[in-house]
Length: 172
Image (cartoon, helix red, strand yellow):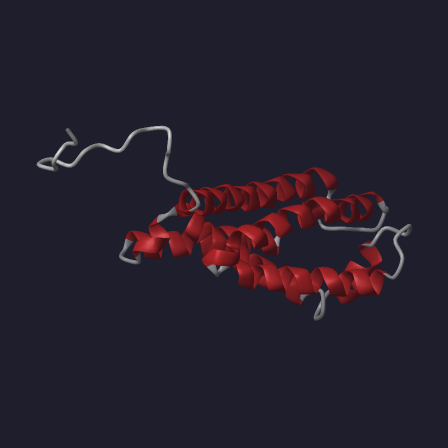
């Protein structure tokens, strides 16, 4: 639940700051990048401090080296969180986080179905809804950053003749 609260809370605060003066934060996907960065800084940190044992236990049994997997996914989340804050790397970071959310979802399913006592928000229906919110957020950033990247890569059209300048001599 803490990641969802962080995502929503930080995004809304940044959006409010945009409304009251910080022009770049008026663009919702920019504020959302900040919310996602805060969320993944939080979730990446708990891969090392606080919940490491629980995360290691969530790794499905058929995967080797659960400690290594938790370490690698934690590093990936921290790196991508920083990458979200840099416009040039935000597309790659958001794309990677989207893939990571999809790949890590089976661990959430395994936890929900394990029979261990878990809080209501970690039960499968609620966890699935949260994952969908997280995916919607990362995909929104992917689309926004792709459009920004694509708009800088446009080539001039060569199929339309250039217009003659007013007053320019025409060839006779």
